[in-house]
Length: 335
Ligand SMILES: NC(=O)C1=CN([C@@H]2O[C@H](COP(=O)(O)OP(=O)(O)OC[C@H]3O[C@@H](n4cnc5c(N)ncnc54)[C@H](O)[C@@H]3O)[C@@H](O)[C@H]2O)C=CC1
Ligand SMILES: O=C([O-])CC(=O)C(=O)O
Image (cartoon, rainbow, N blue to C red; front, side, top):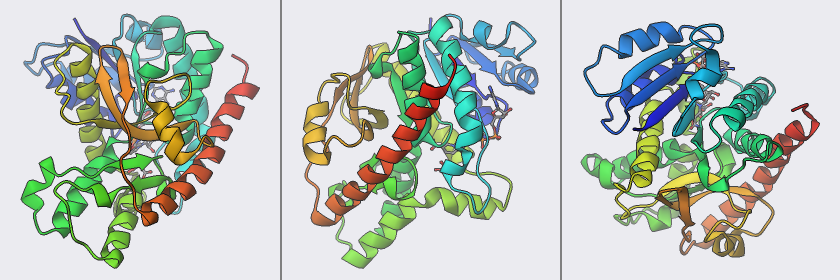
C-alpha cells in the first residue's frame, strides 16, 4: 500500500501532476487536496483505470488537509502562487511562506514520517521553512525532506542535447545541475555532461544562462498566465516516482537524482560537499542516492572547472540569504 498526497492539486501544476501520479501502478491511494476545486479534479482523475483509489479533499469537505494526509507515504506540494512577468521567485515569499508553514504544521502532526517534496517557490526558502517547522514540532528527518529541482535537470538535458544537435538522445543525456532553484543559484555542470560535449566557452555560458533562467522563458511566453506547469508536473512526477521506487526497493541505483536537501544534520556524504562548497549554505541541490528512508547518501559533485567554481561561489552567497529568510520567518512565527 502506497499513499501519495498532492497538496495544491487543482492548480496548474497540481492537475497534470495528479494525472501523472495516477498513471503509476506503485501508488494505491491518491489523495488530492486544494483550497478550491479538488473534488472536481479527483472525480475526473478517479475514472482512469489504474489501481489507485482517488479521493478529493477541500478545507471543509471530506475532513480537509489533515484527513488527506492520514497515512501518507509521500506528500508532493505545488501549493501557492506562481510568478507573473517582472517578478522574481523571491517576490512570492510573502504569500507562499505562510502557505508552506501551514502545510508543514499539518504534516508534522498527521504524517511526520512521509517523504515531503516541496515544489512551491521560492524553493530556496520554502524548504528551510518546512525544515524549521518540522524541527519546532520535534519530527524533522532531513532524509525525508526534498526541494524539487528536477525541472532544472530536465531542462539541462533538453537544451544541451539540442545544442549538440542530438535532440533524440535527450532522455538519456545527463547534465548535473546543483545549487538552488532560482537564477544564479542554479549551477549546471556542463563539464560533466554525459555524453560529453565540446562547446566553446561562449556556448557554455549561453547554455548555462538558459538553464538558469529557463523559468523566465516560460513566464514570458505565458504572458501573465503563470509559470511552468506541464514540464514541472512531468519533473515532479518523475522525482516522486523515483523516491517511491527507491523506498519500496525497486529503484535503479545507476543514476543519482538531484534534489535540494539539508547538508547539515549528519547527512551521509554531506561532508564531501561542504569540503568543496564551504559551510555558508545549509541547503544545496546535490546528487543523492535514494533508498528505503529517503536520502541514503549524498553523492560527491565530481570535478568542477574554474568557471563552474565561480558559479558555485555566487550561488552559495545568494542561497545563504534565501535560507536565513526562511529560517527567520519560522523563528518569528507562532507555531
Ligand atoms: N520547483 C519548481 O521547479 C517549480 C515551482 N513552481 C511553483 O509551484 C507553485 C504552484 O504553481 P502553479 O501550479 O503554476 O500555481 P497555480 O496558482 O496554478 O496553483 C496553485 C494551487 O495552490 C492552491 N493553494 C493555494 N493555497 C493553498 C493551500 N493553503 N493549501 C493547498 N493548496 C493551496 C491554489 O488553490 C491553486 O490551485 C508556485 O509557487 C510556483 O512558483 C512552478 C514551477 C516550477
Ligand atoms: O519560473 C518560475 O517561477 C517557476 C519555476 O520555478 C520554474 O519554471 O523553474
